[in-house]
Image 1 (cartoon, rainbow, N blue to C red):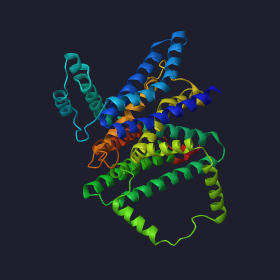
Image 2: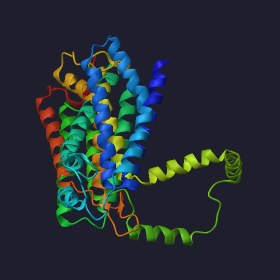
Image 3: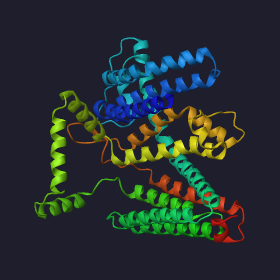
Image 4: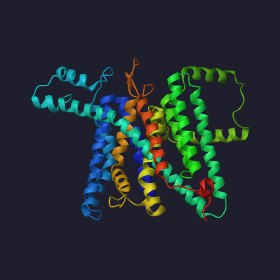
Length: 437
């Protein structure tokens, strides 16, 4: 029963972080968001360090961690209010160096301590500026780590598929996995076709896409043909390459031309009910039941909707994907390699005999701080000033980093090629790979 409460607590924590950080950026501006994320990062870094430094059965550890776990539900909204109250942003200033030099002269500081530690002082400006630069320079690291963790997940999926095929005496799993792989490849080809229709594709972009897709297909064919890979691994690798290409050329937002065409098509359609009458009647009844709920529920739902509207779709998709591959790399893969599914509910250990598992276990201890840093880095890529009344926005900005995304694709395929080169030879190719007595 304890695992259920852990899942609920983790879900609430994740939802709180996902909503509160963009709110701090959207309402208070850049400095407010940076201060809030840095405060959260420091708190959870202290929490993880305390758990790691104290013995597992220590009473001091149990008391300290339980106090911090209970205190975090009051600390998160308190830090949000503190950052919104104390940090103001000039919407036209995005360079922290110029803001620091100009701010030190514009603020009327009466004492040296106020000049160093006061509002807008040297410590505040350097701390926020250092955090800003750290996150910006860490974006390539997060991008490459995403590709590395994805490759680990692909290899684990290949090992699981081999085990499923080799343990059975029929070809049921072979057919299921082939259908699954074909579906993944078909979906990837559809999105690749969508990329080909983007109006912003230049000749250089088309050349890079062609070379990348051809290399991916070549690697997948070699892996399947030599028996060092399998259709599951190949389909997942091809899908990830297409995902990276899709993220390079789109922000998951329709272009103005596409929006105008969709609005014109919707205006020309006849007025027909979207669903059968029985379903529409049930829908009306459901709406009537919702209207009987208290107004506080409507206010809460409205707040959640407005909070999610501040997040760019590409940020949410990238965050969800990185969370999934990071969790799989730190929990599921070591469990499959070592002690099976029973290890999924166990805490990661630094006493593992495998160096890779020890490193992943160390990173999993600091997963809340890593989550905050990765999420803030994604939000900063979409933060930009605008001429609107708000002065800044988290949407429609140039995320940049396309060079590192291409580097990530090349590095991922290179590591997979090295894995195929160093893999065990399979003399019977496809037949022995899919059927072993």
